[in-house]
Amino acid sequence: MTYLVTGGCGFIGSNITGRLLRDGTDVVVFDNMSRNGSSENLAWLRKSGLAPEKFIHGDIRNQGDVDALIEAVKPEAVFHLSGQVAMTTSMRVPRRDFEINVLGSINLLESVRRHSPVAAIVYSSSNKVYGDLGGVAFREMEKRYVAVDFPHGISETAPLDFHTPYGCSKGAADQYMLDYARTYGLKTVVFRHSTVYGGRQYATYDQGWVGWFCQQALAQKADPSIAPFTISGDGKQVRDLLFADDAVEGYLAAVSQLERVKGEAFNIGGGMENSSSLLELFDTLEEIFQIRLAYRPIEWRAGDQKLFVADIAKASRLLNWKPRVGKEAGIRAMCSWVGSL
Image (cartoon, rainbow, N blue to C red; front, side):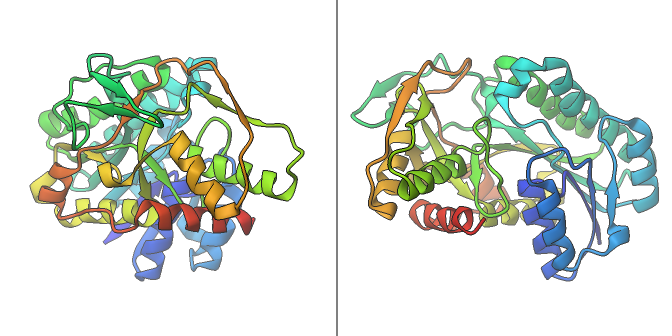
């Protein structure tokens, strides 16, 4: 098979591409190199065996670029990771967010429909399609919020409720992916991610919170006198943590189980046992680095969820997939990778 990874020099994209290269699989990477860390990830992929002709520089927003790509490659599987991935960025520049996430996805769907209609497309969506979960009852505990009626997390039956431009753009693309399966018979699969973290993630203040706080802990370990970092909200908000290696296994599983899962959406995350609040993450980082973290709270981010933990029962059942890397081992690995930069 020939695989195409859009956004293949980003975080998840480079991890998927690296795995395919190690497996000796034919893979093509498409990226416009705009993300922080893209150049470093491309250099790493080339050292890992990505041939020069297998990297194509282009922009998902440009229909001509995408048409030429799909017509030339005619992939049997596409991992669609190109995207604007920061909620805060979407609020500053909503049109750009729309063009990348919605228009870019339409460009890909149309090109595949014309030039490679048998291809699988696995799309990286977001838990933000469920909005702020305002209808969910939360209980405030000492260091986290608990969704009392959802002990196993949020399932795919939760109502869609797009909040913020980012939620709207990811949600619109999510629904286009599913509708192109219904209307045109394309073999699309949607992954609604919670928090994914691990190596090759060049985290920033706006995106990649686990990696970002690992960076802050390392900085305070090196210099305890530096200014405290900020956190949005009270630190009790909860996400489930999925290590990059496990995310890659999910994408590969979607292709291997394609006939069973095409046209389906899955909540993909670490599940309840790998959930963590910010405060609980700080406890882990303080233990790892033997320091006391200094931080100060600021106002909540617009549309932020007090809790999102993916109920991964559907993915476990239909994809025969579940996370294998526990959160403590994953956080330690993340800290080691950040410390190596």
